[in-house]
Length: 334
Image (cartoon, rainbow, N blue to C red):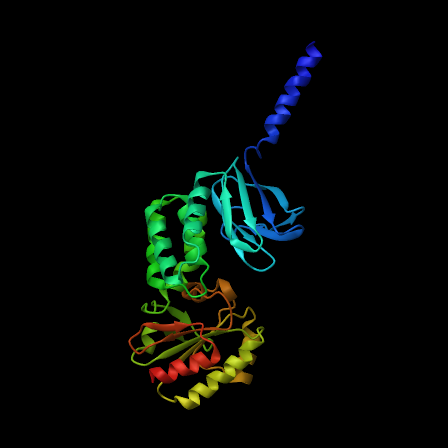
């Protein structure tokens, strides 16, 4: 009899364990219509556990457990590059139901935060972009203290190729006030804020840096005329074409356009050779720290080549323009 009771106790414990992922984990499970077998990626761009997991869909279903010590936003990246953003919390089970032909209409449930955010997404499907961003901004302000507001910010603002600086900074401030202890939000803020503060319509932030020839350069050195700041690196193949464009711009707009070159090289001497061979526009900043350079971080540079175009009034006109766009915008300014 004692053995029977022990077996029943063990079976009961096993049944309870199977009901959820347990402490320090989250379980995500789902089902896709019109998709039998496939793989997708799961990751947290700014979260506590940034590892990328590969999840296998078999028979239209999937299930996986992931470490989770606090609420954060996960990204599900599908083979067609579309995404679903979900919210994970310790000990929770999150359920996703979707049609592979309409992944944007995925229904996510299992927690209050996911259900609120999912209801918002589904309600606003098909809205024009402008209306959608207005609705998302209001959702964030109305729910600023909740993790689903952060999920909305990630999907509708943080992931935009060229976010609108004023609005995005305002929403970041709202979220930081509502969630002062959110570590993922703090990481997003550190990544986005420098880029937004030097975004279109914003005054170029004050800076000071040592130049390659031993001098010093500051923002005030470029007042009164349009300024083109170029970010490049000798190890990046497109940077040679960018240096060639710099020379063409110097000839075309001699005396009217100022230029500053910022290198993301780690080998300073090698970059000196690049400067000499490609006639890179001076002044030139290269401290050998690449993306860890204080000036690069201050400008919010995410990739090379890149650029920031500043008007004669000291305000940023545009950033990261393509070659033709850049020349047309400079010509318009001058």
